[in-house]
Image (cartoon, rainbow, N blue to C red; front, side, top):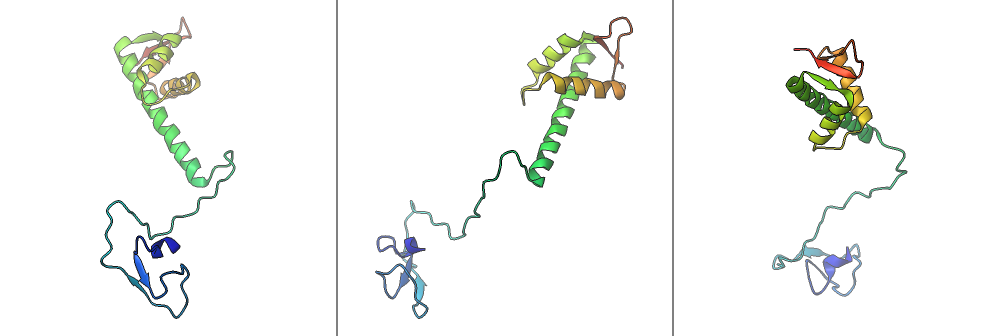
Length: 140
């Protein structure tokens, strides 16, 4: 609070300008003539952020992580369907490599891609080839 009574800036005026403390009987006024474009005062106090253990996440952070994982899963599914629509048949390793190459929003882990492929098989967008289990077929 004492920076508001700084004699060089004079944002607030008070009876005893030399003392930074305010006494109960002292009057404080806003200096209407004060102007300094390079000086910014934030009168709203900032919330103190308590640093916690990085391994423990709050409910909001957990919800955000869950929503982000869902959106990434949808992105992967859309990318896989687009690739498979163009190629009809694709080997697992080639499909994973192509998805990693095309996704530029984040770097997906191969396990995430595998889970997305499994979800697409359950939703009947893809099926495994009967002769070669590592090959997928697009179901139009």
